[in-house]
Amino acid sequence: MPASGLSIGDLATRTGLAVSAIRFYEDHGIVKPLRNDGGHRRYGRHDIRRLSFAMIAQKLGFALSDIGAQMAHLPDHKAPSKSDWSRISAHFQDDINQRITALETMRDRLDGCIGCGCLSLDSCALYNKGDSAADLGVGPRYLMGDAAKPAKSD
Image 1 (cartoon, helix red, strand yellow):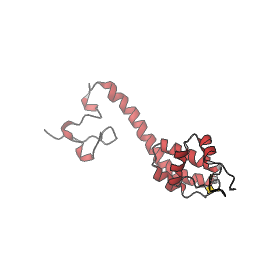
Image 2 (tube, rainbow, N blue to C red):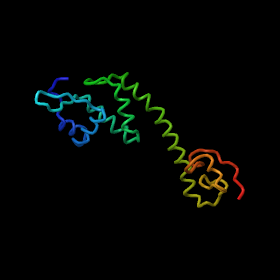
Image 3 (cartoon, rainbow, N blue to C red):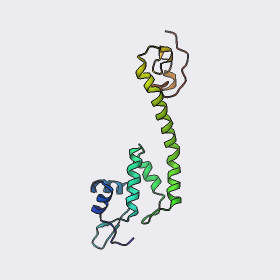
Image 4 (cartoon, rainbow, N blue to C red):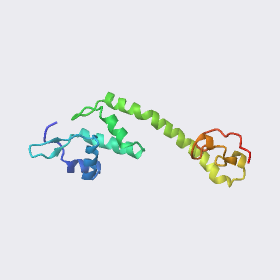
């Protein structure tokens, strides 16, 4: 990449990020600017894609450390190839599919839970007579997909 690449201000304009946010992403290895003769940061156009990917992945709930670790496998100072992006996306696909399944389950169960008015405690995913779900872990275990166990006697 020539030292005449995008300035940090240009990159901010193109991505919608604040300059401070770009520096934050730089600190986490998402982008790796070169320096021109005057010592100013210069970014390649490929950095727009890197930042965009990181922003989307964060909005989907991925940790910046995980995003940075995966992006560390991309080539520096040039646009990643389709196979580079495919390799990274494979890492995230299983997690995304699990999240989709969990969200669909929540959607399908939550409307029944909120709308039922607890008229049928036998089928309520939140009802936990005798704290029988305690052995399964913390949180709303039945709503999270665990099968109900026989209730402990009081």
